[in-house]
Length: 186
Image 1 (cartoon, rainbow, N blue to C red):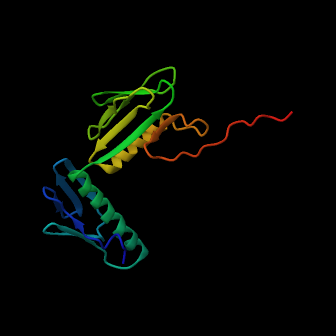
Image 2: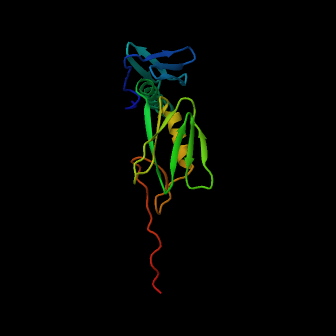
Image 3: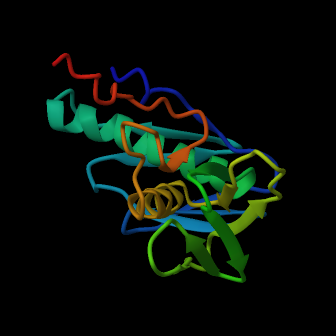
């Protein structure tokens, strides 16, 4: 039995889950609503405020889907009830970020500013920068998959380089650093 798949999903107050005839799970909560198509072999059932996911056989394919769909549904329930947050730090001289509605204006050391359009489901804010601190971009959403995808795209605009660490990194991320040139012995 899948250790993840057999765990029940507890539905918090204000969250409702519906499973329709095509096995599409619709989760509604105070922050929004999400849906996920579930494989027809996997059975999703809601009993009161407990959601369970069951599989028909112990085949490797069913076992892997069992844990996967339970994790996806749990992420949707957590997202619509409490939401997710990702913080990114801009490390570099003159690096800055400005949030203008759903558009991020990033200055990342290139000859031009980068304008990045955010999806409607994601809210962004730039934390106030004190002297000597790096700018921090805070992304919030109820959709964990979309939030991670957008954060990765923003990071790819200027990935941290291994020598000085300049670039966009996640707060708390450990970067692999390399030693620079060693003084040559002539």
